[in-house]
Image 1 (cartoon, rainbow, N blue to C red):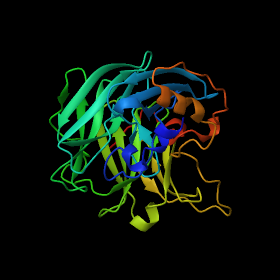
Image 2 (tube, rainbow, N blue to C red; image 1 turned 60 degrees about the vertical axis):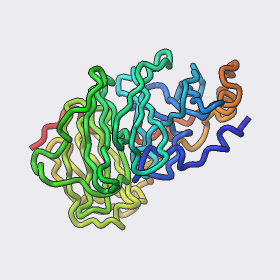
Image 3 (spheres, one colour; image 1 turned 180 degrees about the vertical axis):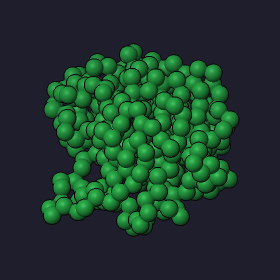
Length: 328
């Protein structure tokens, strides 16, 4: 019964280069206030099994088979994912990447109440899903150009009109400065409006603040930190602030969510407990059920009530920040 899952390599579940070797079949997609987690599993004949699971107790409430291979998109090397709108109504899946660069990018828009496919989107060029607007009406995509993994820009896509908006999203304070680097970690605001991503490896290490409602983007430089520093760091977003955390959970930089001013907190005498934001659920996932669904296709769904640990939710469901920030 586990054969369908065991046959899928981790790289097949990666959202897109440079986010690689991130297996999202267990983490799935959720949102801060959503009671559900959605997982995409390989089904028979190259199809995908979608499963809607209650986060509180791991009960699988609904499942559906959809044609074609699709995955939950990873957005950072810490295992954070995206795809579920903050209002919980829309789930967006990506076709798995087979090569880099890819000539065509495909996405699936699913209504979460029934798990029925609402739209199949095909875009010319190499795109990876970076975020979904809280109402599901706009997608934010990383557009890779010229076959260069460090040559990319964030673009907005209007789902209702099926069109890519013309201008890329750039920081209005420095519109000519290009984003460079690798996505290390991601955290979401509790209302799902802001997506914060830690980038490293470019000329500057920075946090990219993406307004998923207003379609704005800001780059917040982390002066004094190197790629080696940030490569093992995580983000934690709270009311009014975003913390950049060391691997021990100690905040090394603090960002004001309203002004994006960066400060260096004084180190604590004893390191705080490492944050579990951004990680995959550590236990309690109903793997027997998921494997059975993948193996038997549209067979009867067995409800398992293994405890799905609420305190190990992903970064998308645990982070918090200001819901109405003002920026320079």
